[in-house]
Image 1: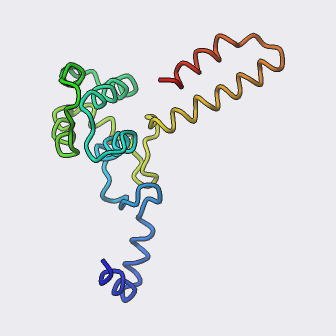
Image 2: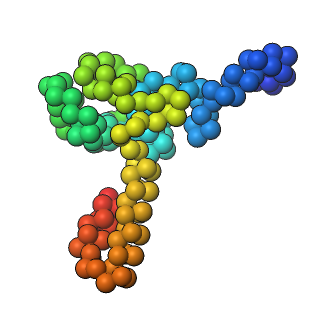
Image 3: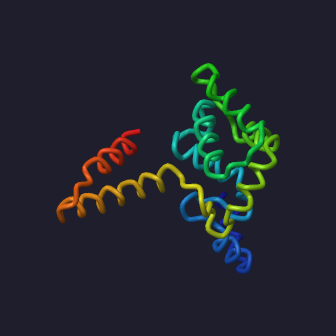
Length: 164
């Protein structure tokens, strides 16, 4: 690694291109991150491990299905397979990419929604993004409550979602 960094300065155009292509959040090259890899990266960040529990993949797949509505039987089959699996079984990125290839409509929807420059999806939120949105909603509802509106039921609903 030291040798690489030492000689990288001899090729300034390459160094600039690499620096522009690195996602500051993940440290990965944007050009190498596909939509399928981005979904699995979300799961890895959430679990804090290189492999992901298959039940969690099933839960995420349910979310992807509700957002993108791919209308293909393979998605439902994989959801059932992952959700009814022995707890503790883990999945690697390679297994996820292979399974995603068997769900072409979902894969196409993910690729269409994925913005490689931002390394983000336009419609699908990561757990962190969803939590931020919920916390912002709770703050807005509390302000409305202080102004006299009766929104306690909505606040309770959002707090229950946050607790998940």
